[in-house]
Length: 609
Image (cartoon, rainbow, N blue to C red; front, side, top):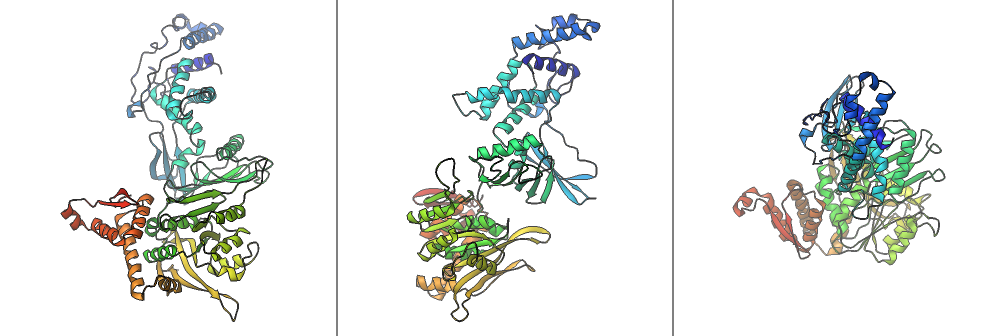
C-alpha cells in the first residue's frame, strides 16, 4: 500500500469512528476530542463540496484520494509524549464461557499482562497473554511501518538502531510522512509492537517477560504454545504460530544466537543472548508437525544456596556439609532427571568456591553464571566452513593446561568423562552433572558404554548428589533425594563401596543425616579434633540460618559474605547476629544495616534481596 493508500484508509478510519484513533467521531478513552476537519483543513475543501451522489461514484473516490494525497504531501505533525493512563487502555480481557479468572499480573506494564483462568469442567488452567488491541487500520499501519522502518534503522550511524528512543523517533517520522494523525494510545501501541518485534521475542515476548515461566514449548504449526509455570505447572497458552511465521521465527532465534539452522541441518541447540537455553528444529523433516522449539529460560539472577534452602531443595545441614566439602576440594556430581535442578544446584554451590581460586567451566550450551573474579568460561563450537569442531573433550584437555583449581563441566555424557576423572586423579577438583536417578545408576552409567570410566578411576569421585522433581502436598517441587559418598573398591567383591550421608524422607519432607566418612577425612586433613569439626559445622549452619532469616538471596551479597567468612569468620558472624537482633539494632540505631569489606572494598548488607 502506498502513502496515499495509507491516507485513504485513515480517512475511512476517521469517518467510521472506531474509537482508538482519537478523532471527533469517537475518541480513545481519556483523550480529548478534536474537530473532525481540524487536521485536514487544506485538503478537505474539495471533499466538503462533493455531493452524496458524487461520493458514492467514481468522482467521489477520486476526490477522497486527491484530498488525502494532498495531506500526505503536506505531512502531519505529531506531538509525542510518554504514555499516560488518560491516553486510554490498550486492551481488555473477557474470559471465555466456563472459565474463571484465577490470576492476573503485568509482564510488560502498561502494554502487556497475563490472565490465567481455570475451567472447572475440564479441570484445566489456561494462560492468556494480553497485548494492545489493534483495529484493521492500525494493523495495516503497523505492517507498513515494520517494512518502512527497516532502512532508516539499518543506515543509522549514531546510537543503537533498535533502541526504544530510536524506534520512537523513526515511528514518529514515518507517521508524519504518511500524513496520519493518531492518538497517543495508537502511537504507543504501534511502538510496543515495533519494539517487541525488533528488540524482543515477537509473539512470545510476553512469555519471555513472565518471571513465573520456566519452559516455553512450541510443538508445531498452528499449535498452541505450552509453558511450565512455577505455580500452575504445565499450561496451554493463547499464542500460536502459522507455518511461515514459525519457520522464520526458528531461523531468527538461531541467527540471534550466532548459529545456523537449515533443512540440511535442521536441529540446533544453542543459547539465546539473554542466556536462555533453546533447542530448535526447522521444517517437517525431523518434526512432522512442523518447526518446533523449546526454551528453558535463564534467570536474571542465579539461585543462591539460600534460595535452595528456602525452596526446601536442601536443608541447612546439607548445604553446610557441601560448603565444607567444596572448600576442602572434594569433587562432586549432581545427578537427576530432566528439570530436576541439577545445573541450578551446581551453579549455586559453586558460590562456596574460595575467593581467588582459579575456576574453569566447560559447557556445550552456556548455562553457568558464577560471581567469581578468577573464572574462565568456555563453550563448544561446531565447525563453520573452515577449521574443526571444538567439543568438550578438546576443551577439557585445553583446560588442564590453564592450571585451574576447580573445573566445572556442564554435563558428562561421552569420552570427555575419562579425561574428567583423570583430572580428578591428578588433584583437580571437578563438578559436573549427569542424567541418572540414583547412586547405583550413576555408577552404572560411568562404568559402561558410552562413558567407560574404569572403576579404579571412579573412586576418585567424592560426592554424588541425586535430585528429583516430585510432588509434595500436590505441588511439584525439587528435592535432594540423597547425598552419597563414594568409597574405595572392595578388595573381596571388586564392587565400589558408597554410603549415604543424607537421605530425603518423602513422608515427612525432611532430610535424615547419617555418619559421614568424608567429614572424618576432612577432620584428619585439617588437623581438627572432633569437637573442632562439629563447632565449625555448627557455625556454618548458623551462618546459613541467619541469611535465611534475613532473606539474603542476592547472589552478589551472598558471595561477598561467604568470601568474608573465609577471611574473618568471627567478625562476619557478629555482624550477622547483630543484623538479626532487633533489640541490638534499636540500640545501635542502625536499622539492621551491616557494613563489611570484601577484598578491601566496602559493601553494604541490609539483610534484604
